[in-house]
Length: 225
Image 1 (cartoon, rainbow, N blue to C red):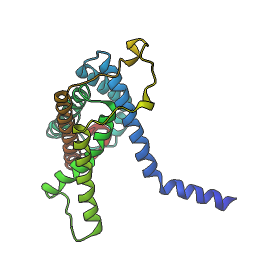
Image 2 (cartoon, rainbow, N blue to C red; image 1 turned 90 degrees about the horizontal axis):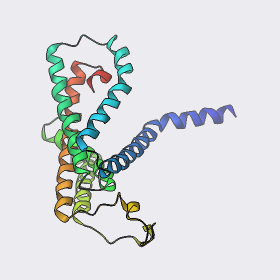
Image 3 (cartoon, helix red, strand yellow; image 1 turned 60 degrees about the horizontal axis):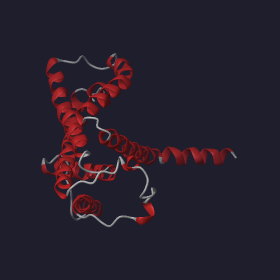
């Protein structure tokens, strides 16, 4: 019995990163649904970003307070760098994301988030932060995964399939308010939203790359984010 429990603990410890990754994906999907619902009800995307960042600041401030006692002093130069990094990765990315979700759907927003690793990889290769070898299997896998990820988003943005009949939960004679979150956009709005989403993911990817430099100079994660 004891060996079985140890084996289960070992399995959990080994797969903890994958479980955390799946949990984060569920959080992203839920956030996309909630934000789409709020913006479809009339909330401004910019106001939503302010509320989101304010709530995040309140939630992380206790961790940042205790972390500041163990970190190095924050210089004016480092403060300016952190401001610029946050301006790209949080302010620009969040505003572009929630403006774009006003023209697209929550499903597209959740799916488009998966292009962030591919964009980050491409940018890291271009600035020679990461090397790649096409002669190795993992190098080819990274290239193929990045191409498929971006191709999937382009297909998602340009191709609109037929409606699924079994997903029609409401009768035709029901109140139109039941469909308040189902907003039909034109082709131009869909493309505009897709381009804005791509810009948001690019800014998000750039934030990851810039954080590498700032984390080496100021390794206090709760303050730097």
